[in-house]
Length: 331
Image 1 (cartoon, helix red, strand yellow):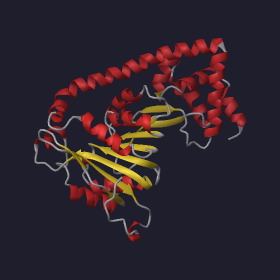
Image 2 (cartoon, one colour):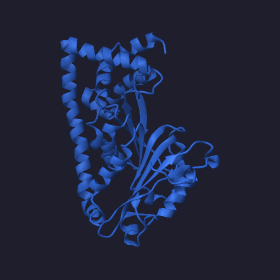
Image 3 (spheres, one colour):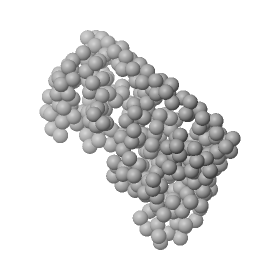
Image 4 (cartoon, one colour):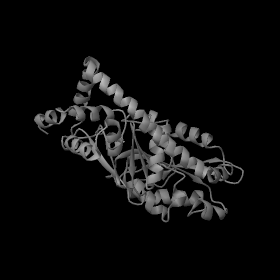
C-alpha cells in the first residue's frame, strides 16, 4: 500500500484518537461513537478510511460491527507497527494529544463497566443452572490447572478456543500463547467473553463468531486447538473434529475437555446437552479419523460426573502411510 494512503488516513485528529483507542481494546462502532462524542455515521466514515488504509480491521458480529488493530499477521504489519510507535511517541511528546487520549481512556472505562454489568446480569440469570451442573463434577480450577500444565509443556503458539463461552479458557491461555482466537456461535456469549477479556493486551486475544462445524479459518492456522465442554453440544462430533483438524497445523495439538459417558438424561433438557458424555474408545476413534494421534486421557472424578481431558497431535497430509499414525503417544 502506498505510504501516501497511510499518511492521508492519519491526517485527522479523530482518526488518531480511534487508533489510540483500538490499541487498548477491540471496540464496536457504537462504543467508539460513545467515547468520541460523535455520531455513529460520522465515526463509521472515519473507520472506513482507516480500514481502507490497512490501519484497522472490521469484523461483523450479528448487527454489530467491531473494530480492532490489525493482527500481527496482517500484510502491512511492519508499517502498522511503525505507525503505532509513532503514535506512542506523539502521545508522550504532545501535551494536547496526551490530554485528549487520557480523556478518551477515562470514557473508555464506562464502556468496560457496561460490558461487565451485562456479564453480571447474565450470570445472575443463569446462576442456578450453572450451580446445578458444577456441583456434579470436579472443581473447574483443578481441570484448568491440569490442562494448562499438560499443554504448557511445549509452546502453545497460536491457540483456537472453540466454543469459548464465557472466555475462561482464552483468559487462562492468553498469557502463555502467542495469540488466542476465541470462537463462539452465540452473540450473547461473545459479549460475556468480551467483558472477561477486555483487560488483556489488545493483541493477546480476539473474539470471532462462528460455528464449530464450519470454522471461518483457512487450513493449518493454529498450533493448539481447545474444545472445552463444547463437544457434547455437537450433533456430529466427527464433523466438529474434522473441522478442528483442518485448521490445525501439522504436529499441532488438540485438547478436548468433556464429560465421560454418563446416564444423566436430565442434562439434555436442562442444559441442552446433545451427547451424554463420551467413552475413551469413542474419542480415540474420532481423533484418529480426523488425523490426530491420541494420547492417554486424564480423568477427574466428581460427585456424579467424571470430567476427562483427551489429547491428540495432528499428523501430516500422509497420515495413512505413517507407521505411528495409529499409535497412542504422549502430547
